[in-house]
Image (cartoon, rainbow, N blue to C red; front, side, top):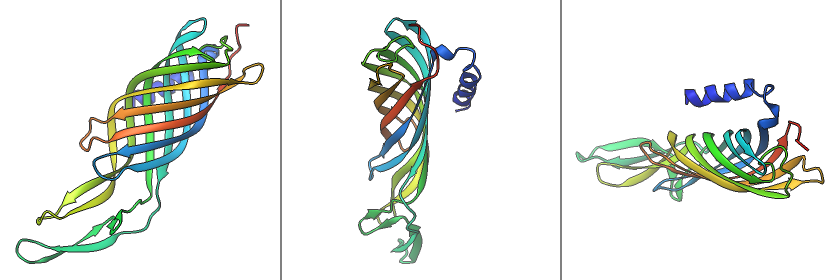
Length: 221
């Protein structure tokens, strides 16, 4: 996590030194944290910065950090429930579940992957003014978001609790890029992503993001 943040700071510091290799995007992501219990959907905002390490005509190899933040649900409050333990005592507890399943309570979401990406066609480089392009890549992801966890009481009755989890694991993304206007000064990106968590509850995190890319450097035309 610290290395990712330090890399982001280093990229921002170097922005003015190498403006022709930097690309920025703003957009709206949707993430689904999927476990064996009910999946949870989060929405938010994304700011993505990409630096081209290698450029060859209409293709490039880049290093990027798409930073997303947002949240999910609302806050309905806790529900009190109870069960009998093995000695016949009534045990009360607070739960996030009602008769229809777990509450979708208000929870935050942060997603910060470090991505090595191949870019082809539109905006793969500052000089590439193609109408369309695509990209694909992978790297290491960090995700902090909502998950639903199944618990069992001593009598093997189950209930689902809504909680939060830090997740780290390999990720991959891919998408298309469509240049806008005659001068192709911007582009629309549609990106899908997937991250496999190595943490305890092993959430699978799916994402889809719609972005607007704007290029701040000068083209080589």
